[in-house]
Image (tube, rainbow, N blue to C red; front, side, top):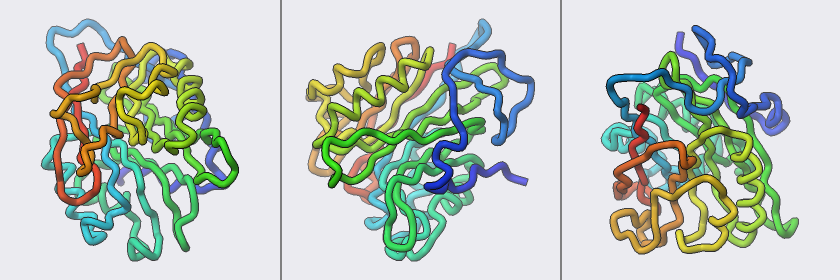
Amino acid sequence: MKKIISLILASLLLMSIVSCKKKEVPESTTAAATTTVAATTTEAKNEEKKITVATFNIKNGNLAGYDFGILADDILSSGAEIVGLQEVDMFSNRNQNQDTLKILSQKTGFEYYTFAYAVPQDVGQYGNAILSKYPIIEHEVIDLSMKTSGEEKRILLHAVIQVDDKTTMDFFVTHIQGSSASVQFKDIDTQLEKCDSFILLGDFNQNPSSEVYSYLQNSYMMNKDNDEITHTTIDEYDFDNIIPHTSVKCVNPRTIDTKHSDHYMLLADWIIQ
């Protein structure tokens, strides 16, 4: 029976609190495991392992006609194995009451996913998600600060993903409110500082030259300013980024214009040594 991370309800957002402290990796883990395994922990290996990670704002499926099989094909064609998703509808009227992540999981064959509820969307929910080929062994959702009470709530999704018997990584996914970027980046850095290593994925609503990125310590950006290779929206705003910890080796940033969103999919290869 497939291991599925069930829909995170608003009342249960903080049910699972994920620590970033290093601990010994258990011999076997499941999606319901409570043992915290943080940061990358590997034994010496003769060969490198490459895992392709991506961030993709799917615009709730609107430009794919809410056919999530089309978006699943885009993910499979890209070669991505772990994808951070933004603007995800779940069971809303506008997405025809579909379970977006279940469909994406079934169509891609990626057994593991988790959804982070941010705000209501008519009868359904709207937020961020992670879709993964590898087990998600823990997750949590953190509220991000807002400058004014009238702004749309934003959240940070944190998941620990186990990519092999000896290696786990802390992944974070977010969608920043542009007008509150400074306070939200500070909130995010507070969470990242708890981790020995991480990969942060998201739509940051800021170009790479923005000073708000300076709040993120011990990290670097895959999508750099004035890099035409990694323009990530149809309007060529470089809002999407993959931000690894300085200890994490990521290479080959690139984009795919799927034509099924107002954002390109941004990818990079995580090299495990």
